[in-house]
Length: 308
Image (cartoon, rainbow, N blue to C red; front, side, top):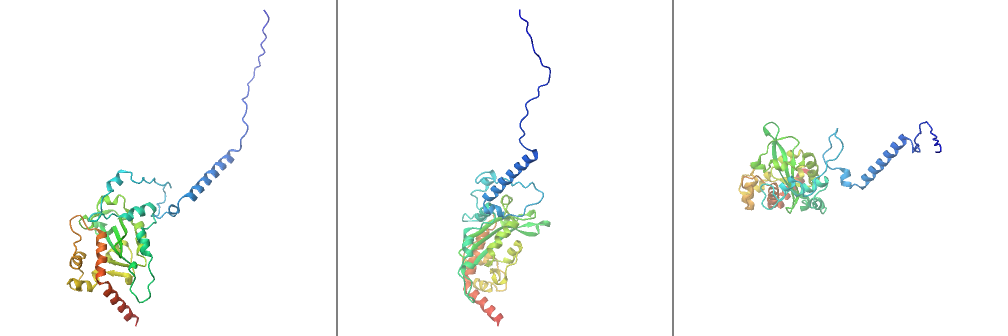
């Protein structure tokens, strides 16, 4: 047999090294730049309404992540409120402006935009019908013993009675008394209600430059934490001409319900489910139209006499 010779080399074989692909710091820098470019591109592609962010100011100290918005028509809460009219309504009146303002935060209803445009009136003439809006608010009790009246629903209608705004509003302070017997507000209405600061901005945009008609409207302005110019305010509880036509004493504030019964021959605020602010706002505008021509003339004469 031939001899088998083995040639064995004793030593450690080093693994083949990978070619260097760059500095670790440089890699981090490149990843960071890519991420920044991606975010900048997303911001450019985002709709303008979302960039402006027309809601209440964010609280500091959060994670900065936005909560995912529920899809339209989804969720148990949405199904619970779907198809239900607000309390006291008799014509399928829903707070439609709520859905618009909740989606965009800054949009107003088409009716409000139409009302904002109107013919320019010559000085010395009564305001144009497009300048008139009627408002009615429902309040709940907050603070000690529920003694403070806080806004919980606001409705605004045009001269023709079209709904410009109708929304449930969540007060800044906890609700102590819902006052359901009069307000028609219940706990379930606050689930998707608009926060007060956001609702206030939207409402004041509509009222700006308008002649506001209301019944004991100072209570509505107080709940809104707002003061409207006196020359642009028409309070149907303080128009002696209305009381005279209804057969009431001129110097006494008569309820909206009694004036509507006497002058419009209609019943409002019936039942125990609470008032409907849309119905009350429309009724207030109808009452004002009864004495509009005479009362506007009276106001113009008063203004001329003061100037003289």
